[in-house]
Length: 213
Image (cartoon, rainbow, N blue to C red):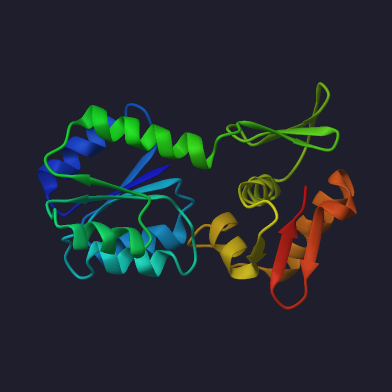
C-alpha cells in the first residue's frame, strides 16, 4: 500500500489515478492527516511533499521514524543542497524534484520496493512464506494461521534479527479502530513458535520480540 501526501489537489489526483492502476493507494492532503494514516495503516511506501499544511514533510518524516521505518520519497520544488541533505537526515529514502515524470516516479518506487521487500518467498526452516499473499507452506501443504498471525509473521520477516517493540507490532497488525491486546499477542507468538519452532522468536523482556533466522 502506498500513501500519497500532497496538498495540491490536482497533483494529488494525478498521482492517485496513475498509481492506483498498479498499487493499493491511500492519500492525505496535510501533515497531520499523513501522520495519522502512517500510524494506523500498514503502508509499504510514502510519497511525501515537503511544503504541507499543519506539519511540513520534514516534520512528518521525523515523527514517522519514531515508530516505523516505512520508505519515504520526498516530493519538492526545493532544490538547494541543504534541503536535499535535510530530507535525507529527517528519514527520507529518495528525493524527487518537481516537475517530474510519472514514469520516473514509478521506477523510483519500484526500485525501493524491490530493495526493501526484495524476497517474495522466504524460507523459514522447512517452511516457505509467501510475502505477497501472506501464506505459509510446508511443502505443498498450506498452513492455517489467523490473519493477525500472518501479518505478524510478515512483519517479523521484514525485520529479521531486529528487536520489535510491542508498540511497533500493535501499530502494524491492529487496525486503528481495534484495541491492541497483549494477551492476544502472546497467543499469536505462542502459535507461531508451535509451528515454526521456539528458537525463531526471542522474547526481549520488557521490550518486545526478535525473529531470528
